[in-house]
Length: 533
Image (cartoon, rainbow, N blue to C red):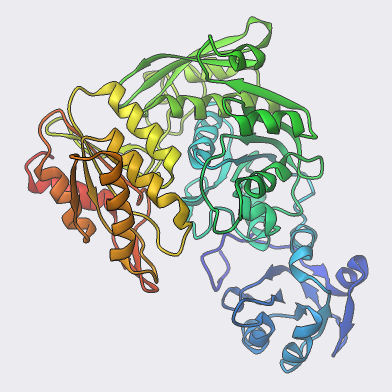
């Protein structure tokens, strides 16, 4: 692969396009030296510039991106795109300067033009919602793999093309990165691509220039009210994905008010799923219905029934009915994209398809063959307490996971958790209360305090936990390593320890510094120390 300044996924063999034609096609103004070169890439970070790039200087909270025009030129940029305010800053680099009033609004279309991502596009799936997006994305990729389809993946955890993987820094990449990634996926003959789509990705134009074949909606619950002042504005951001200029078809879980509203307000053809009990009116109104057949600590079996008496019974190697709901959404999204439910059932039966492993000879256990990093991930062995590491950091995620654990264990539930600093503080009291009400013992620790006072964050969680469940066994242990070991010290054989928050992440962010820390690795080390692994 050609040298690159960053770990972003880019095409290995970009096809250069005429820079004068770009200016003409988009009707941009141009100042400084005339544009006479070709362009083969686009980026908004001067650190990511490679030779042949168009560097886009955006106005930021503290700096204007055009201030880094010289660095971009030194790295090989052929021109600068910026707003009128950035023109004098960019001019100092001596490159052609292309001007548009709002560069961010142009990013998606520009990137699509430069990387030609509208030419023979793959089948595009987009997943949005508060909780479950990452899981649905991995489930989609897993089923496609079992169907023998080469798929690409972009989630909160990672971006992946076959065996090539990079760690994610945003739930949804910037528009420039998405289109570069799609071009790279085209080179790898990827036939389907799954993108996790955050609310911020929609309002910040990161998925501009893309029309999804099928989009899915998991749920909406309390989160991100630091970015969106009310749940209504948060919902409105998600709803934008279900518009004709964004997607062709949609699938929505309608178990709650927000899903029902989206089903009625969507402007694209829509299919609905209900996981509610059959006695619930919403169950009968939905087109697809999910029924849980069996739940264990590490597998959930379910039946999905749809129109024309079609049905499928399968399982996920994961804890919880909420994971079955995520799987149902993935399956119906595939059906809506054109896959036959019978073909999906055959692939999941263990008798067909390919999962890319040594077990492709037919001896694979039936069900969806998926691994989702840090999502109710069991890291314990056959002895001692069952330990799950989970990314859940919202009240609803806490509730779903704790209720699922309660259904599959007769032992105590011990929960370790903290709350993000510099992120929506309005959910902290509810998180503390839910943990105390639904767990038998709680250990409050630090979790990415960032620039906030970690003791103050813990105090809110502790006060709300004690108020919600007076007399509950509650501990405060600031250091995450010590907090997990405290939880293990009070756990016995048959108990469950849920460590919520860190999930797949491999750092602990304090005062701007990302300190290396993997909850999964640390939990395994602690289990070894106790002789349980």
